[in-house]
Length: 307
Image (cartoon, rainbow, N blue to C red; front, side, top):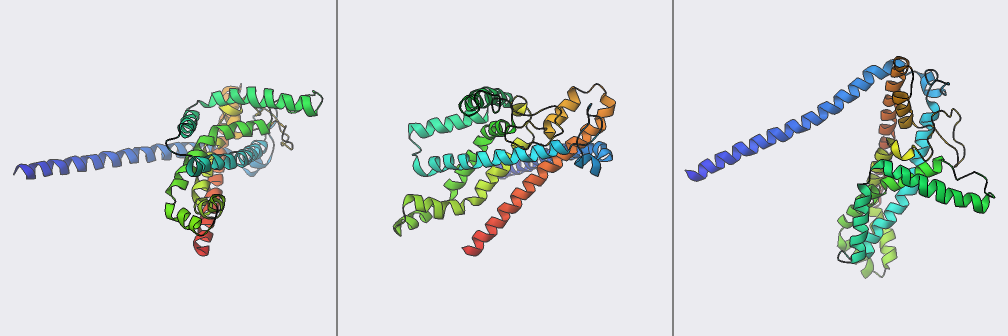
């Protein structure tokens, strides 16, 4: 009898927990749906082809946002090119070469974990001090006779700052993927006479491609919407020209939203532009993620077909 009462209480507790957890999931979905619906309702009216393909005009209440779209895409691409190779190499060392009990491994993991918890505005100040002033200033002194060329805010420094910001995401995701690959694959490769380097390149990495691309997708999602790191390193308030050099300043959708919401003298005039810009930013982020997921799916299909 006592056992039956205990089982009944456990069933009630399990049912209650399942309902509460399901309710929490519904709350999250509802919040996201409300946000998307609010942005879509207020932003679709101003979303025209001219708005997407023309440059803004002085005062920011006329014209379009094409330079901001172009700058955002270019920034994310440069960031991805910079962060993925470095993050993968660090993850390979942590997974394949270092021992879990070694002090260097523990120190590196601690540094990565702490880097992931640093506020984004700190990365902006770091990018200004290290990339713009130190690296860019020294490049100007060595190669441009001290003229101001790279020692100023530029898209390359903004991309590298975002790369540092998203580096922990790529490292941790890739390392977890590499560790999930069966040890038997490595042992079989080594038993057949392959070196450790050949095993990593020809056996481990091909099986970890999907996880590496997942880390890249997460990095894109994180970097595309960040504003604080690029405030001091390259984003500009009004630059209707497209960035055509690595040392060019650029417009960016997130920063454009920040400017419209805080610096506009006419809130009523900029509110439709603000909502439409946010809608474009969300759509662009989803599109970049979708493209990355399509590439990941295609590579998975090729690996399965070749395997």
